[in-house]
Length: 191
Picture 1 (spheres, helix red, strand yellow):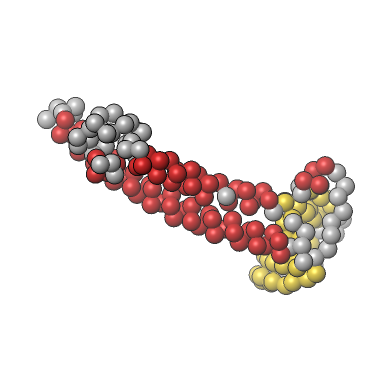
Picture 2: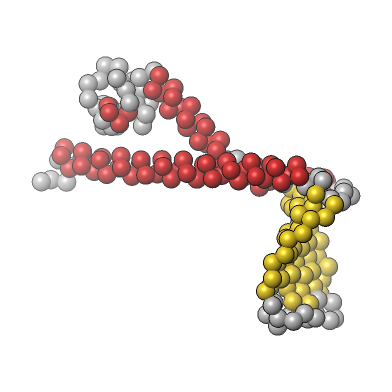
C-alpha cells in the first residue's frame, strides 16, 4: 500500500479526530478549573479589603527563611525574609488580621505593583517584598474560560448554519464528508 493511498489517509484522519477529541476534553477540563480559580480569586480580592489572610511558610536550613503571602487591599504581598536566629524546622501557619490601607506613592504603586528590597544587614538578615495586584492573576485565570466561550459560540454558529465544525466549509450540498478537510459528516454534526 502506498503512503498516499486513500485508505491510509482516512486511517490517519481517524487518529487525528481521536486526538482532537482528547484535546477538546482536556481543554474543557482546564477551562473549568481555570474558571473556578478565577471565581475564587475574585472572592479573595473582594475579601482582601476587609480581612487580611496571611499564610506564613517557614523553611529552615541552617538559618531562617520565611515566605509570607498576604492578600491586603486588592494586592497580594509576597514577603521573603532570612536571618540566622531561628532553630531548624518547617512550618506552615494561617492567620487573619484586619486589612490595612496601603499608601499610593507612584504610578506603578497605583496600578498595584511594587517591590521593596531592604538589602543584607551585617547580621546576615535580608528581606524583600513584592506586591502584585489581584487583577493580574484574576485576568490570567480568565483567559481559558474566555477562549472556551468563544469556541462554544463558534461551534454553535457552525452547527446552526450547516458548516463543518473543523474548517467552516458549507456542508449543505455534501453527502458524507466535508470536501474541504475530509471530516465525516457524523463528526461535524451537520445534517
